[in-house]
Length: 213
Image 1 (cartoon, rainbow, N blue to C red):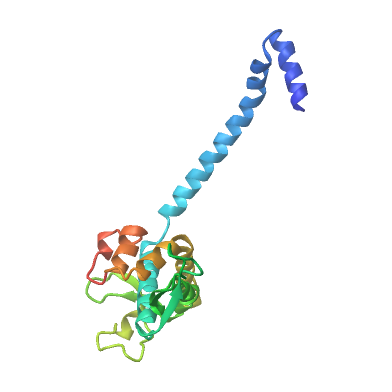
Image 2: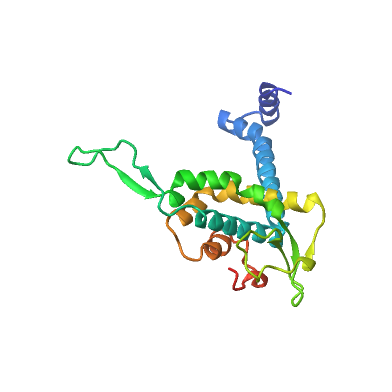
């Protein structure tokens, strides 16, 4: 039924009434539908958030911080990059500012584009003492010390496990890209704790409040 038909029918039933009244009669069902849709979206969003695996998302966030820290540490500290573009100073001279390459926004963006590919080097790890589970790097780097997690405590659940961690990583990077770059460019202390506990909230549970943060 068209809106004009609804208005006509409403007019006949009411016998009288202003145009505003008729609009209210015809629009009420639409308003109710919109409210129902918004309520459904809100409930779905809340349910999705509540179903997030904290061990998975906290581990992904920690892995991002670890991989970024490692990449930055492996970059020659003597390398610099010009920033500021072609902006002029008040005296008319060209603004020329150099910053360490490893802390530049351009370089950090490049690292972020690749960081989630490193999630294939992580697997589910069960602490032999506490039985707590988290994802840790199982593939040691050349300069990793003797404190690397014992390989026998890793649980390899196939490619699905690594895909889930990569998806969580990509979700965090997409959502918090600016925050991640800001933390690393400013050489903030305790980046992992700030990013994963305070900014993202993925490591809020007491289970994950360990010294590694």
